[in-house]
Image 1 (cartoon, rainbow, N blue to C red):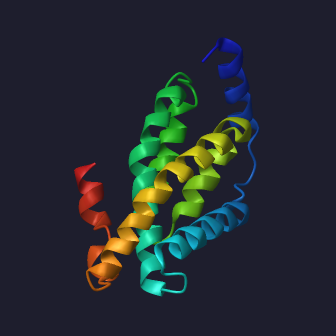
Image 2 (cartoon, rainbow, N blue to C red):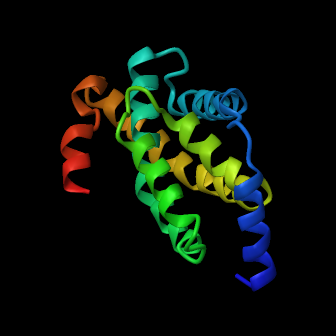
Length: 154
């Protein structure tokens, strides 16, 4: 990332307002509806709960790499890291839509396309996971992430 790109990112971070959680929620809801439909579980509440949970896990694990860019902003980095950790520490309060909205807020022109690409890549594992659990009897709630243990290991 060039110095002008870093300057633009810094400026975007400093000027940010409230996160567009409702907009991010629409994106996540539409995305998950398509994944569930493709997996053969369009109206399955437990499959939706599992898919939201697993999507959040995918986001937490894969989007951690994006902090490599943010580390190049030493003044903003500690605050951003603390904000991200706060989102991660309360999974029942902050779902995938909150994670999407937070990244969008940093610099929409950079992170909206990155997130769209990541969601495309996550579609197949989510779809296949749902289909596999359905084939095994549909015990979705037995396969949710243990966020307390996950957080302790991170």
